[in-house]
Length: 440
Image 1 (cartoon, rainbow, N blue to C red):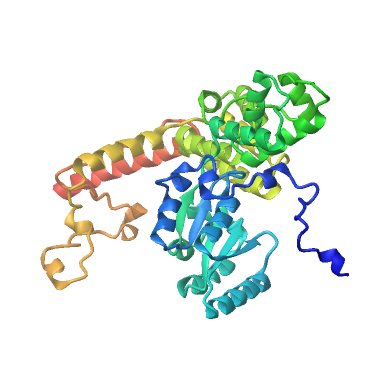
Image 2 (cartoon, one colour):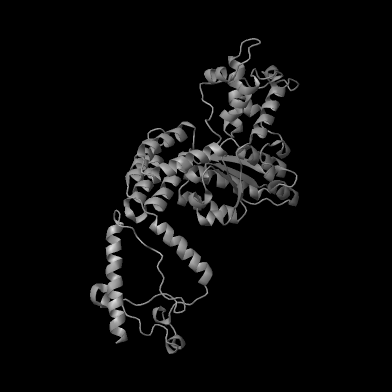
């Protein structure tokens, strides 16, 4: 049996290990595309130099190095690295990890706990991290692709620093490919155009770029070089029609927005389909539809905002591709709804007035008087409770006295705002009559 464990035999590379795993950086300095964090003057580099590491949330797209950087941090600070995925872990797993971390701490060792997809934990599970973070049992490094402000508890965020990971730019992807070619000892069998297409296909994801490179090497015959069309054929993936961070992205979302505003559901659906086909983030499209509902429809059809929000919820529930139909439905609803920018215009006018005259005090009759001094100063004096008046409308003036009445909201006679306009005109008539009666 002893012959099976010869100490002088070199350790063999496990078979079938993916290229992306083999090329994982061995130090923070080797990480590409996140120089604002790992460069000479980066945030993480400064932390390591200071000798003090706190809990962190890594926020960024897939394939940008979040897991790798967490491992390297543990290695460069002498911490024990533990990893969990919120997708596959529950309360029992957390308790086990916390117990092991406490045992290590009693032996003078600290644990860096890396939690992938941390936003998948519910609020109670997120709260379970707080005691072990506070007493130093673990240094938590959570990774998420979602906005931490919306997906993580405020208590957890208050104890962790959020560090943003960026999608890898073309230059960074090119560096990864060059590193892969050096490791493999051969060039990628792609012409110049095909290489550029492969970089675009990776869409800022370093792991995806290296996986695509592996597919190319596997498919290539001896001395074969692929052009762009050949590349797309072998990897069965289309290159993005546009760069989501550049002009094509903004041109298409502008065309979609203007088609909805112009009440053209067919053109709107066409641009929505083009953006889906280009690999646009569906939740970005959902946010823009919500914005269109508020900006271009408003109270002409109050259901527009409800439908747009419901489309986002439906997509969250169904995912792709089934959930894309919810966005198509919302797009048609918005395009065919009556249009009004009256609330949008009114809010901009109110914001201008607030900036120009924001120092003016409200009239005293609408202010509460919780103290004797304030009552003596006439706070609340003369206020009429609207529900005690005819029509539940007192007709009082609520603007600052030095400002006078202002009109920001002017609803058009379209859709539901036709009814709102009737109400405002009726209240204006009552206000004028009661002002006249009060003055006589």
